[in-house]
Picture 1 (tube, rainbow over the protein chains, first blue to last red):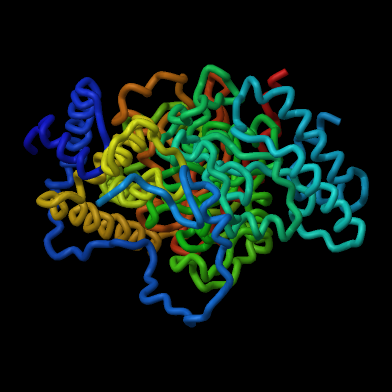
Picture 2: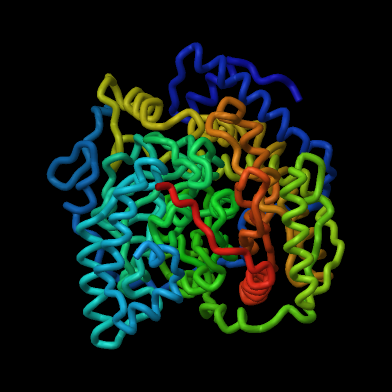
Amino acid sequence: MAEITIKEVEHVAELARLRFSPQELEEFTSQLDAILKFVGKLESLDTEGVEPTYRAIEIVNCFREDEVKPSLPIEKVTANAPESEEGAFVVPRII
Amino acid sequence: MAEVLDLTISELRELLDSGDISAQELTGLYLERIASVDEKVKAYVTITEKEARDQAREADRKIKEGSASPLTGIPLGIKDVICTEGIPTTCSSKMLKDFRPPFNATVMEKLEAQCAVMLGKLNMDEFAMGSSTENSAFFSTRNPWDLERIPGGSSGGSAAAVAARMCVASLGSDTGGSIRQPASHCGVVGLKPTYGLVSRFGLVAFASSLDQIGPLTRSVEDAAILLEAIAGHDERDSTSLPRPVPRLRKSCQEGLKGIRVGIPKEYFIEGVQEKVVSEIKKGLKAMEEMGAELVDISLPHTEYAIATYYIIATAEASSNLSRYDGVKYGFRAENYSNLMEMYKETRAQGFGPEVKRRIMLGTYCLSAGYYDAFYKKASQVRTLIIEDFKKAFGKCDVIASPVAPTTAFKIGEKVHDPLQMYLSDIFTIPVNLAGIPGMSVPCGFDRKGLPVGLQLMAGHLQEEILFRAAYNLERGLGLERKWPSLN
């Protein structure tokens, strides 16, 4: 398995909406590299034709009646927000 | 009345119902115990004294009118990853330090319906990611048997509190061993139920196809009482199984005659401490003497389980933890000039290093160009691991193994080497990947006096036979009941 580069780690950090200092980037790159080399051992296993398992149990299409039920009151929903106003979450200007 | 603190749920039930002790007195004793020893152990993140006393009063009323349930008035601790309405649920993370859920998890509703008493919320590795509770953003919990050592993790607070007699029993969560490994290191019983048996509604998500809530207790019977209380179908969790609650205490009463116990050769390998192996062998012998038949089995893909797990669990975590964006709840950074910066700063400051490491690994494994090589590949190997178990359970009824390769290690010993830390979960991870139940049962001590746990595993939804084996193992070993005094 090819070695992971600082540039790739920066790209993944961008995708994951994380920010690292240059020192952290270096540390993470070497740790991730070691972990990726370790998990790379799966490559040696022949899995041709094996169905992947994405869930631990066989439940498909868990339907229920589309009934209106009481929801949480808005004040309770916004109570934990860092910033809210008139029942809405406040975020930095986007447009 | 120090000895009251040693009693199990079933023993306390008799005392409470006969009026020998009231729920308020019992709760008071536990609150005193917490006040005197938790500064050493550091198991509790939040102590809910007022709520506990109110619940105990209500429990006494229920007991007096003769309508007590198995958990009425029993003081419990709850891992801080389970939502408790109006009470901080931090996941031991800066991100959720001030989060007070607007609702109760289903398991909390069930405990409240029985009028159980909650003493407080227990420390853990941040977002349940870790094997030592050193990843808590607040403080490390200590092993009550040796305060220089880790209690295991991620449910380290839940295991330590039971062993230190700061609650009768507790709830934890287990994604790759997070109930069983700390239970083993602290000398208590710890159960990860079949995936889907206990509702995950209100359990803060780490890896949704692996997470499961379960009990940590002083006895196998207590684990049965707690599981019976929290299990059951819940329409708010679409992965919850529509199945009646198993009748565990009844199956405990049956003996071991005719039970086949599988011994997987891949779990008795180099790197497992000698004293761990010898204590496990004593447990196996005890089962054999009670009429069980020991059968050699093989789980050939065991060596791939950790790699498989760290791809699947981190992939699911990177998706689940994207919700922490500083908008709807939790921490928000102060220094930003636009939305993107707000996200990044919030997450950079709110998450600790292990959580970031796992989000990064998961994001990488799911990113364009790597998905097939990592996530899909791991999901295929997961199928092979499941098939290993299916084949094995054709030859045996339960499988026995060590819970962890070593007894509790020293605080700080593995903290700088994430890979070494991951390897300590080698024997617990396959159970989560397969969605089957697994239990840690105390089976002895090493030369330093540190507890050793024996893991029992059973097939999908085979809790009844699992408990039957565990209960008889506990009885057959007849370990002296002793707990660290900490005074």
